Image 1 (cartoon, rainbow, N blue to C red):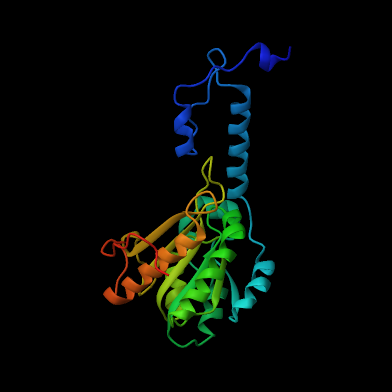
Image 2: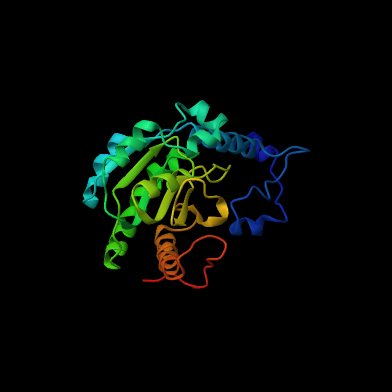
Length: 254
């Protein structure tokens, strides 16, 4: 008789609730401890989350693949020179490096409706897994609606607010930032989305709207794009984003 048969894990009264959440509930117990398999699963999830924080973007591969959108792709850097500095100095991840500022200033772009910025944030893994399928759907839908789009910008060591400076330099009416979210123990690959009307450096969070947990096990790409398109429509109608822009539409738009 093996150890599992000799010391079976008794059923947990909350077992039925596990179908509604990825949270660690109804783990069972062995004596006064949780089962070994659950302890090991926790350690593995923690390792995935830590790896996600220190993951990096394959900027060359992404820029090459994203040329299919028929738009230039520019790789930019912030004032955070490496990952450790990025984690210790969040303010540096909100400001473009001078070389990147000069690059965007030299483009002399015409005013556009939407600038899309993709930043690694706290999980480059999330961007590598989710950004391209999101862009595939969004790009088609945005062009169908007649939105003019700025060149794609891919940012290393970027925070959410970096989109405001980039959107301003690209003369965009609205900026959309796709960014890797802070990884949890069940969501190391979660991508967030932030949109800001009339972007400019120095804006604070109440001026933005957020759609979070975009990943296969969370909010689907299809629903996230539909929510974004609805918010874009309302943002341009009301000439604002943030706390005054509410999602009143119960379903996504086609």
